[in-house]
Image 1: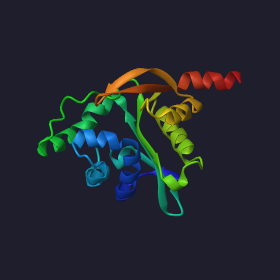
Image 2: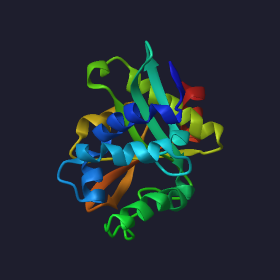
Image 3: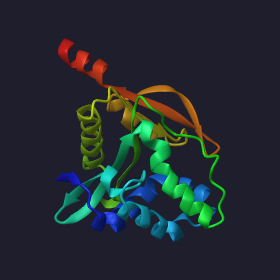
Image 4: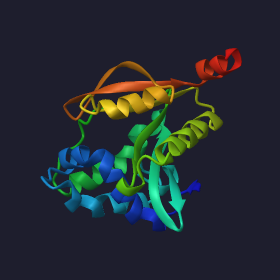
Length: 194
């Protein structure tokens, strides 16, 4: 079952997020071992009003176990949502002000999606992504965006199967990520003609 996350889900969500963003966490924190920074993610997942917050997260729960999560938000809110994280990193002595924006206004941004390794291949990622798309559409967004690492062609194919199209390259933390967008209006038109 997919449900809105609550703050007490932070530990499970942090572990799932780390699958998608271990490299990003390493670059943000300067840690060679991103898993040593799980407490960093848990802290922000538990709090409201930041990009990793439980408020922006859906979880897939199976037999009372969280085995998938998706975190997404309005791209226009990125800088406001990111500021608490930048402030925290600055307190730790990590200069993080010049991080590129991975999204912008005009799209509902899927920041992370993760599924427990033992549950992959069971359709959980598909269900979460569909729920994320529907959440964005319900909030009035016509474009649902995400970034995919060019070194992960399997993920790119998955997003393409879900209706996302490559829209160019977006640099983020010195990696040229592929920017992919699901266009709600195009998808609705296609369903009507099929």
